Length: 210
Ligand code: GLN
Image 1 (spheres, rainbow, N blue to C red):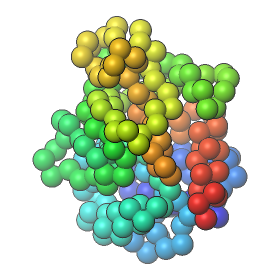
Image 2: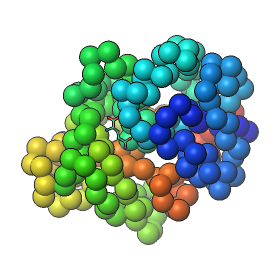
Image 3: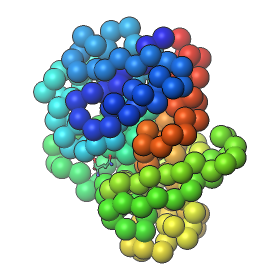
């Protein structure tokens, strides 16, 4: 089973290594041809405006949009989450996204500061210990539709102690890991730590959908 990793910009090498650790082989995707036969797709962290532009100019956007709409499992981290979201706030006007997950995200908004921070994230479906979340100019999930399962939230203290209006939906911490069917997305970067539980979960989701 090969899992494609969009390799136009951003943390694609780290995702490819994480997938290999999790027992899948990664195929770097740089052209529409590279999409043929993959069992799932990973959209890395990086810069969503650039990813959007490069996916369009490389011809990847349209065929990938069709595949994802038809059920190709997808994982997006940070900029990759933005690419999968239905709604993007504070984006560039010409920025595109796949609308694969019914969330609205605000770019560069999450957490204690606009730039970067790290926080331990309790993820009940992964058990103990918490995941170590690395957040780099992360988006905030500002709304999530009924089909979206919030798998993890930032602790309220981490959400509220900084920039103020950073997206606590309902008095709970801001969502940082969400799943909708075969699409999973995080505001943080699991590919930048050595914990492979999230990549293993995604590989299992991909295997289940083959
Ligand atoms: N701020 C970036 C964006 O809007 C995302 C940052 C990241 O992926 N680390 O695309």
